Length: 103
Image 1 (cartoon, one colour):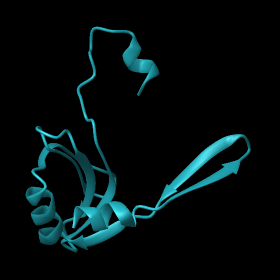
Image 2: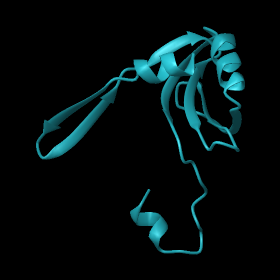
Image 3: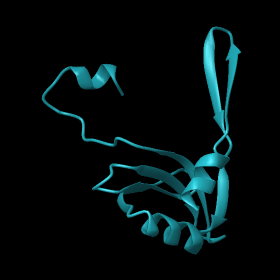
Image 4: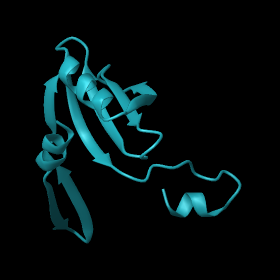
């Protein structure tokens, strides 16, 4: 399932007024299906917050492989959208000045 999700994230780049705008295709599934898929990948939720639409934004992480996913869940619709996936998640060293330039 994660392969399907990753393959479905098509990235388009558009140049406008010297700014770079990136649009990701957002893939949505029933929440239970996404949770089961991420669980099968060894990912667990590590951060959660609500956006202005009262949707849950969750960061998932596999602590062994460092793969990660970011999801947006609409609790009323019981639907979860995969906003992005990747590898190499690591904490930012709070003692360095490098952190602000690389965020």
